[in-house]
Image (tube, rainbow, N blue to C red):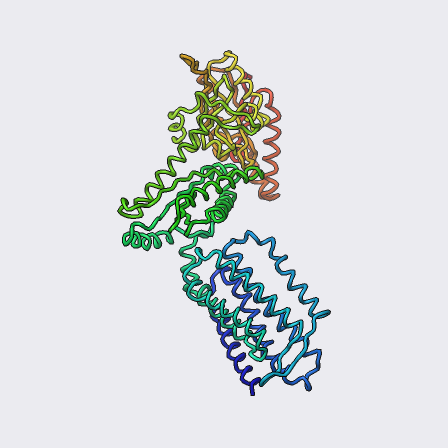
Length: 603
């Protein structure tokens, strides 16, 4: 009689799980359900094998022994794989994939158990009240291994209980405890055969607490997709609750810690925005690891984070900040980006009207720290070689204001005594310089200049530095961080200091960009550039000759031989014209069909 009742239980469980499969397929969004689908699959397999093995173990005289043994092996393994998947989900939940490289090692016990189950461990069968069940070292080891995974999951949740949402606390945690108790009861009362039902219960709890459509949507709304931390929308919701609690009892200690990434712009400029996004994610991991006392950590904006401490002493925040700064130093020693974090915090007290007042103080303290860090960098900056750069004469606020005038306008200053150059942030971002302050900049810059233009640039700079020429003016091409050359205009001159101030080589670089001055068909400078050069020659009243050339039959070539051949023709002609006037002038092209040759002397 009992086996029939057990089979009814497993049939009900199977119907419930199949219904969850239907619902999950109907409402799933993106990749959120991958872990749930895996768990659901193992749950369905376990319930199926649970029901099948109940039948086979009670009909051993009719079923071949090897069939019964094989089905029991699958029954044990499906339960253990379910427990392992739940354990991996718990790790991902709290450690955000940082232990991913260890997942394969966490699965080693399952592989060892499967081998031992086939070779060494014994699975026997005995009759109990109303039904038969498996006994022996095989089932016992399987129950123990699943028990270890579930207990490990529970301990991780308890350790991180402050970070658990209300969904865990109200539904999943009690169901997990129920599952562990069911495992324990199964060990002592063999005829209960509760594992299929227990796994179904925990799967249902998992779905309705975490994986149902409404919970997924809510979690998406309150979670920052890039960092995995709580989003600003979550903060807006939580601060109302905290403020109401503070209004009832102002003795409750709240501490707000603001964190700002100082060098995010530098990372974006050097390596691109994808690297910047990865950098933000890495900072989020550091905050999660080292701000251990924080009840919540929010990403408030692009590079701003907020940690809220509740019922914590100020010493806890000081300890966390110290550990976080030490972790940033260690990151730099590993050869990674050294995280430059500005931090400021404020502690609530009854004198504050609302927690938002505390928040404003914390924000102010963070910006003070940000200014202090910037001042320290301004006073003394460590160069890549390990030497300290003298920034005297390069920290004028007027320079900061000039840098804001245009994204393609790059002011620069060079202290001729220390040979340290300050560049505009926009120039650093475009050309991939790590710092605004660079020693021996001319030697670094000349490597980025087009080989055909390097000599002209160096001759002009040398003429100014040796006072053979009053002002520096030069047009040349330089390679951006994307590897493409752009056309630049550079103007500058030497300004002599007074009363002990250093002599400064000051000027600006204008980025004209590639499309405005280069002909894409031939690689020659276009007619716009020719016009600019002619204007300068006329202004200097210098002699020059201009020859205009036009390909009359380019359309016929295109019609007879195709577009690729016509492009090849104009490219070859462009190269020949460039070589022909290399020593005496320059060749220009407009869309590859019209050419102009400008010679520096009269013909």
